[in-house]
Length: 271
Image (cartoon, rainbow, N blue to C red; front, side, top):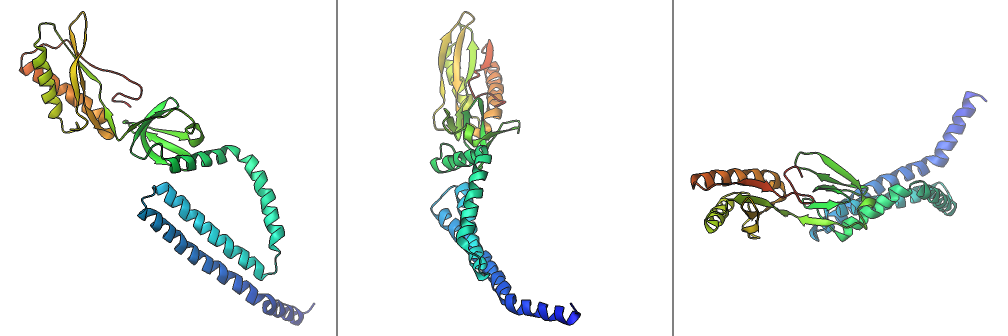
């Protein structure tokens, strides 16, 4: 085959398929532009209705992919492809992928369940499946909890759905104790503890702190000091209140036997 024949064949192919290729590329480009516009519109609409960020992101991505899929189908149609066999092939392949990725898909389904049912939100403190922490991110595959020491716990979403969940919300209650001798003026001790708690900037005015006699022991009287603080302040607030209690009781020449923090599930300065 000589050069002239090759050139003639190339020109013929260009004439025959050039406009089809150009049309397909134009359709894909228009699909990308339209997909971005639709995704942005979906996200803005959901934001106006105050949907959670994960829902907005997922919905916008799905909208973009649907528009691009439609554009790809239209582009293939320009070349004379039979769409029905292609869709059937994709369905068979999808079935195989579904069996291979059962664990991944179960995480996705669980993630969607969490996003739409909202058993907890970012910034709240939860305890579940033996771990606890402040919710840092909620994604399709996993949920990340963060501790006061900045360590992270990443939980697959399928481990969360169906489990018993303790949601502390955005505030937590400190469980502190002060032990004083039996000869102490208990009323005065409770007043001092109340003043200390109210003077701490991390303590929330509502719900009102629980302060009062908790128990009577061999060594003395135990006074419970249980104020409410925001989740980020849970760790430092306990130390600050204990220091202030020691200083205030000493200034009043009031004896202390011990200071103790109750360790409950999901509580403590290291939580």
